[in-house]
Length: 176
Image (tube, one colour):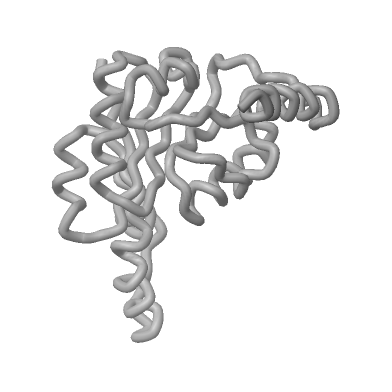
């Protein structure tokens, strides 16, 4: 019984002593990413390549984000968003493969009352209008329209850059 109590405490102390020393970033004007799929991982990687401060909210011990700073918790909970510095973030990106989770993250961010940009990914065409109703500042809908663009390319239809961008990234004008 004593080892059940002492073991985890001792392991934690060893990890603190021997583990990598990573300075916590200042949680101001940073990007918060939620989600665990390829889009979330790749976006975190690309922002970090550009020396942007990135924090990822994970729901378990997910190690696929490398040495990115993480907060463990439910991204739809205000307490988790506050711990991640959501009030002071530059943008909060809901990039899960689950459209409903992304919508609930955006609702939680709106409840938080931050000025951070709110970005939601949409994977399924039928959910696009539903996600628009939670009023994110941007909607990334690459999987929804990728097949349309592929069909256009294969049939040699003209693909206009502005049209393409508007289909993949739905940006709402800034509200004053």
